[in-house]
Length: 291
Image (cartoon, rainbow, N blue to C red; front, side):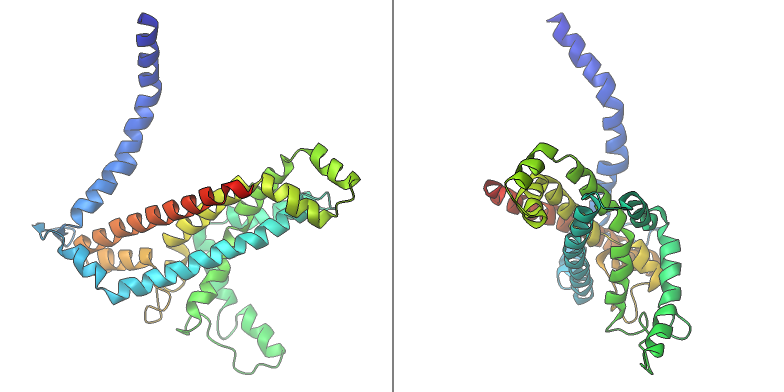
């Protein structure tokens, strides 16, 4: 009995500080954000309790649902890009020459700050002297578009650097997972006459499927709350064409000084991310028997 009590005390000593830290920087701010969403508040003066008014207004806010649609497009593009990252990882893990060098090159964007990446791509997209438009003009296109100034193109122009930024991160995860696949299984398949394509599809991919599912959740949730690169490159413009949920929340709270409504948006964004994670996990469980 004394030994059991000592074990619980040890557990409390080791876990307690981390639990308090987690409560202080994660869970208490979440509860506080939900509470501020019940207020009419400019961030400085007196708070006025308005109940669920901000949350009900949010459900009817067309600008918010427009930003949610843009976040959804970004999430779908990020999930589709995982196929590209996985393909590159298969190639890098197949003992090709220069695989180590290529892996380091793919990691470079992940090492750069978002501000640096945004500045780099803003120069590439510059309508008058940007690298992309100069290249298009050399191909004979006389009036290349203003990528970040065109409401029809701005969101899709931002998706490209977003995908490029996280390529190294996902490639590294897939590469490490593929390296853990038992070589004996691969050799046995080769002896049985399986081609490299069939080894990748029928042996390696099922063995790393749990890792793939985790990366799908990371890509989806990360895209739904994505903010920094978009805010730096366009600020959500032009005319809200590249506005995502996080940038809409920021503009509402810090530019319009409506912290009550901004907090409601932030709390609703958290709920959307939790629902998306739950749906993806349920779908993953449904596919579990396939592997």
